Length: 518
Image 1 (cartoon, rainbow, N blue to C red):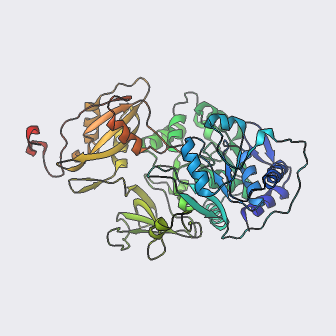
Image 2 (cartoon, rainbow, N blue to C red):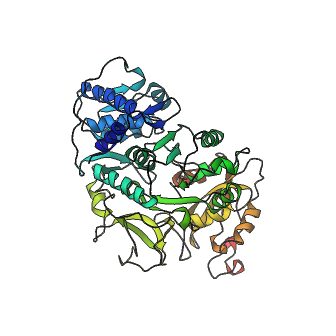
Image 3 (tube, helix red, strand yellow):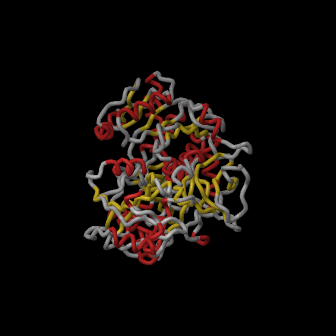
């Protein structure tokens, strides 16, 4: 079955049932189908034949637009509306999209009108016009449903090919894993141009007859009010959102009593946020893991299986293995290596990237994730870092997350990011960036002493800088490339602090050469 076939079936089985609530309106199944028919009519009238780009706020408009594109036999290209003009231009050109579905305020937010053959502004459609109804175009499991462009944190965005079969498989896998059914109610504001927002927050509830509540912007106090009003059973967010909820003074455990799953994704959840959330609200945040290339979800930690720093077992039909990237040999439980995936949810490759596709899979057909992790004896996966982000300090492998967790455990630190810089003595040296709680004083020496009590001395940052806000992607990931740019501009919104000379593994600070000889 195609994605549009599955969604239409759900909407037509319960046409008057509420399926979506957003900031502007309540959507029944019938309303969603009617909106999709109107949009599909406009797509056909445009006479275009390429993919359909979609730039919309998190709302019921997005599934209506996607459904319309699929009904006309097109692939969807979700657009990150926070990108600059040239980045949007690249995605449109690379994907071959010739139609853009959006709304007027979104174009104002983007600051330009992208150069495509046709722009369909949904807020300008004549709703009195009866759309021409055409039979939906068929689609097979292997047909492309979406081109999901990666964030481009390590270069130009790549269009991940997601077929109808990939996305339907990931929805089924998630349903089986958490026993998801129509009694669930979801709440979230993750952008739908992100794979997590598309699959978990959009396709999952629509296909499985559940209600979903969207809000376009993350305002912590508003999210708490939505919890009180709609009593969701599942909330999906990124770590920074859970940190924001902790700062809502009037929030109480009763507000979250209906919640069965608090799911965090996008990047590792700091231990301090998880601990504070559980202590204050009595709710354990379960981490999930995935990547755009996998639909995206591969692992999901159910509440009964919660373990610190674990993203849980693999979803049904997802195969996971840990490999030594140097030898390509599979590693036993407990050993760290590159995590690799296989399954019906895994992409067949990147759009227009034959050279990268040749390197994407290993000889056994497993996708190389670029993430470092380990699997325990019970099959639970823990992610410890990125292969590209790994620091090598005097021959020792060190991952930024461990240092960031240590910094975040200091009461003055709201969040932290760590990068490595060249060090003539040790190879690399860690540099920390901290975002402080409101009113907290910055004391680099105190932070270093604090870190020494939690991690090995050679892992303690050689410099610590205060920043007003850590640079993040739309999904909450810390942009390490931007941190490196801050390091190159000492006066740009950061307080630079040179710390005491760092130690090497097994070598005391006193044994290192004097500064004059370095």
